[in-house]
Length: 201
View 1: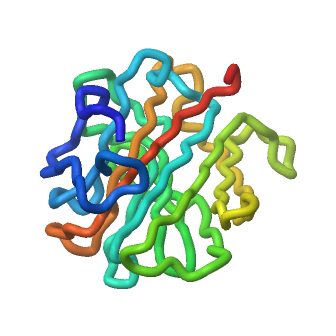
View 2: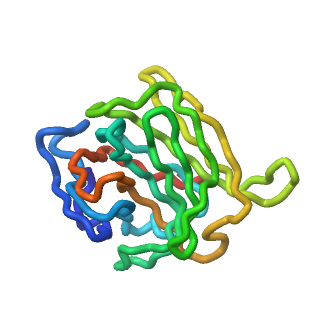
């Protein structure tokens, strides 16, 4: 896991866990906090990603309602850890939901069907991609694709489109990891080996 100095943490207790991880020496262990919160990367080159990819190992006690989350196009400058406008992918047992959050108001963009049931205490390698596209009505949209690595190949869960287009031309589009939990005090959510990609890479 990248050093904590690379992240803005939102109202959260966390640690670098040296017992449960994908790559030594540690993973990011989210201990407790808000129902929906995140840690946004603040490294140079990650602050305005209108189009990109997040690749992340994640795990949680998903059947018990503790859902790991991936965030992109967060409208928050460096140092601000409470964005109110962003996209969020929430990973549940048999499905994954992508939400558009505008001024703290949550709207469901799409529901994806997972290719397997996500179990507790199990690492999953997930890739989420977003880019500018045009939907079937030829309207400019944000295309959002989610995939899972099955050990041999990426399994495509589908591509959905949102015409609201958060972050279009704003100059601030941050990415991060986090949680969406049915319990304020979940202690089961982990992230590790997070990769952030832009089209130039």
